[in-house]
Image 1 (cartoon, rainbow, N blue to C red):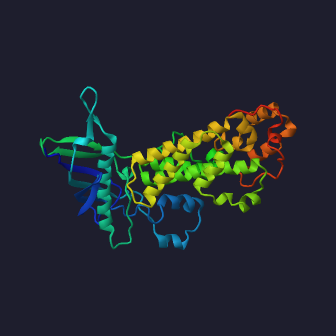
Image 2 (image 1 turned 180 degrees about the vertical axis):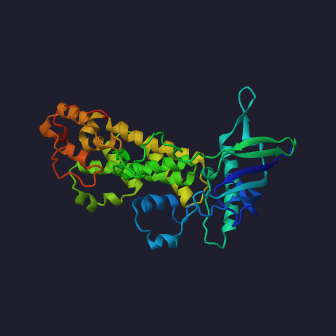
Length: 415
């Protein structure tokens, strides 16, 4: 049986394929479907060149910063030039055709014999299409100052359509080439304020949590989520590994502080330069318990990162999900160990570090801990809370781990 199928795809991308609106550019490129080599013909027609979009100075910005205050316009503003008010972003319509080696694995049968979408194979199909578009754009940009790619589904304008015609039946069926909506929303939902007479802006300011300096740890975590949301799997996998490595590094910082290391001693001991395996070894020696599942999980996160970065393996959603689930396993293991009363009593600062999000603990929680402990015995804890993210360790004030919580005191559960 002939399992091949003719595929025709049409979508739009935020790129200008040619210098002239209405002109088109075609290329024959190689792409891949799973492990199979696929040759595709790609045609890109320019719908908007994007001239003036993002270039020069926006006229409204000029009005709001110079004309509004009656200032003289700096000469360099005219030299840079002003963009058109109605400038629209670049956009091209893309059409591509290729032969799919085997379309049958796109669907599998459920228990009742009904076809069900097979996500990993559809991911291969989308990757095949996006890589072909990226290669054609690369051929357009060859020998120019422009740089292209890699493209992801976040670079599609709207949802594209894929027409698949199996050779054996000659009956086409259609599926979506899904795009990813822009990050964030198009509107704020705020009513805002009326302009004062003369068009002057009375700017009210509000304190927002995002203005607080974010720990590098959470910066990497957010970056991984951002990349995954854009279906940029390679970048998401790399960011996931960096987030996990930072997570383990922060715990080692807490352990060092628990055992009376100063910042300079920490650096002299080379803790900051430990690789992931060495850092995990430090954690296991202090947290105890069965660390084998977490050990294998952190190796998987690192291995997936190396596969994408060093071995050139194709990053997929499945590979990212493996990294994410493995990283969560390591984090849950460290949390579980620090919920153990004896482990937490030996490492109070580490348990304090791990059981919070970005912001310091609330005053209510601090008060509750203070009431539970003897106030004279917790001199190091407020210091850690106010100096996070442990940019400088507390001064040496720990003679025995039990001195941190107070002898015989109940160690707090996760805050």
